[in-house]
Image 1: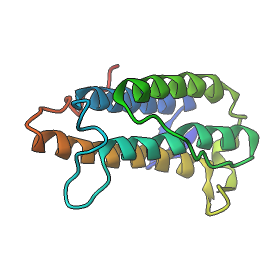
Image 2: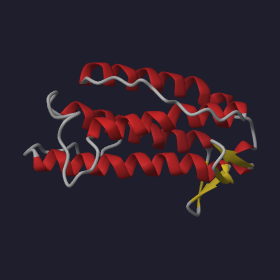
Image 3: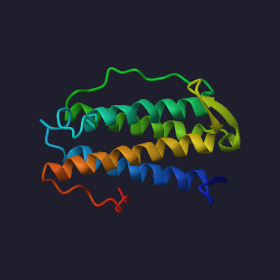
Image 4: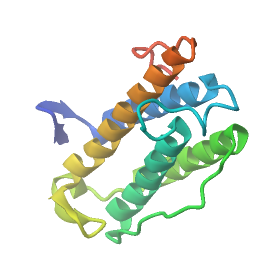
Length: 159
């Protein structure tokens, strides 16, 4: 079992939670008008499309690092249109589904240095990736509301 935020969860429970968040992020991407995903921002913040690129730079590369102990940053290029972004998101989800079962037993409690710059227990590193996605998805919700679009229900992560 791994310890995350003072809750005891199994790796399978944690991963199901993460995939619920990813499905909600996918719905958020879908909610954006094609012409606003990579152009609309508020207050000089990045567009939601750019934020999704960041999420993609973290998800699969982090799991690869967890499994292989080799941390390689994903530089892109990333899709610049909604249909291609959704296809890439889905491909990343499939890759994550392949990688998650390969995480060695006990790995979540090991210390590592993610991408040569973030030290910590693997459980913390993986949880950070999920927190980062939630944070940026919330920015997407603000953008959608500013565009007059109701975002997906944030509590519905049933997929």
